[in-house]
Length: 276
Image: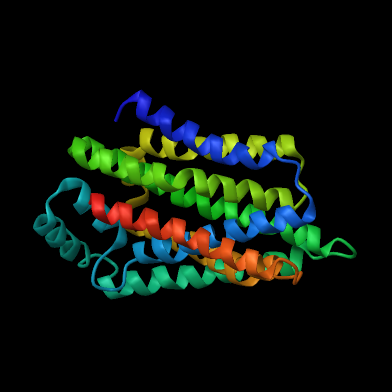
């Protein structure tokens, strides 16, 4: 993993985040862009976040470590040894999926009890969705950087595989994040700063990868991913889809863009599978 690779990830994410800021959006165009972004988010949660969580037979984070080490049998044996600690594989998975539910409830309660006030419900709700999306994407980006660091440290080829996978969807996710914040009428300068900071997350995860893995451990990594997945489930299904189709105009265009967004995530998932 070289400095040029880190810079490439940063620039790709930054370009995606800045693209929505280069257009003066009216309400119609913004909702069309949001349809595309919502499709990308749906693809991210169902094709990237949720499949990475453990199901009771293995640990999601252990799978990352075994991929990086290239030692499937040893990693599997290590996973079974880990189950002799305080939690078994099944307990581990149950706890992780409880955190998915916690992520869903946390965003709902934040919106329902804290941010809905008086005449500005919609605006506050849109902003809450933006911050929730930022949290979920940042966790996803951080763990991707950590996995990249571990893989590159063990196998240059695997490091390049993960780099290509990160580049494949980083710009799309950054674009979607900025679009959601614009919908919440966040000032463009602040959106640009958010895009800049988000673009730094994966390189930071890569630089601190080994240290962060040691601090968090397998359970800590899985719980973070579970919270992010729960956040995205609520944001996508309960907020963004409703906002996209709140107005009935351009219904077919919105459906098409929603499908394109999901399709882009399907392509990145296929690319990751093919490269792996």
